[in-house]
Image (cartoon, rainbow, N blue to C red; front, side, top):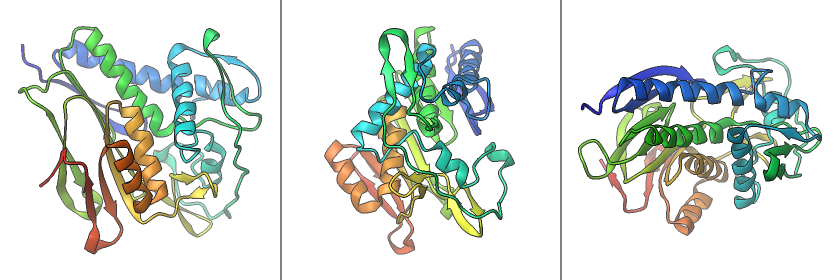
Length: 301
């Protein structure tokens, strides 16, 4: 049986691809991604995330998948000492990201700066209940995309796939043995600077996520802004990195760590990845020192 059945589609504001052993499994994976998008989209007023945001300050019972998303987001916030903050939706909207990316345009209105809320998400695991702090709104963002990749990979393996490869935008989730045997090899491209494959990440299983300030950029009030918010300022992060690519056992954690590293800048990123013994590629703004690879599991091309 050929392991190369593939579906290509668009979801979560990104081009997506799923490779699985059969057309049925690949299509099943696509449907699962689309279901998760319907549950988690902040642009759909009927989604579970929108319902939770509307009920901020009150207990809301949610599905198991949405509870897991919010529980992991709160765990990531604690683990990163608040550098990853999933309650920055109002700050993102204030910058002008108040509609889908495809519909976003430059905005002449002046910047505003909503207050950053430091209170946690309150979780009730016995009943899959969540309660946001009053006045806060949850943004699934990258962690939602990463967790979707993890959930779909697990579901396809459970449905009988020996191996799967899932691409959601710039994120990749691989599970099971690589098609030809050995380790998976994920090429890291830097199309923003016109460089193909400056590094390749090898891994037996897991996720590879990229966070970048180069793509989702626009102007608000005559100022260049991007979608990665520094929770200390409530504004687009000022950083010496253009992008960060991270490998981790799960795609949701790779997403979190890539974002935290990018917000914190190169010096903090080096320290963090060495502390966690993680594989990463840092792409800096300085053209003379553009690429830095961390971990021996990356092989420079």
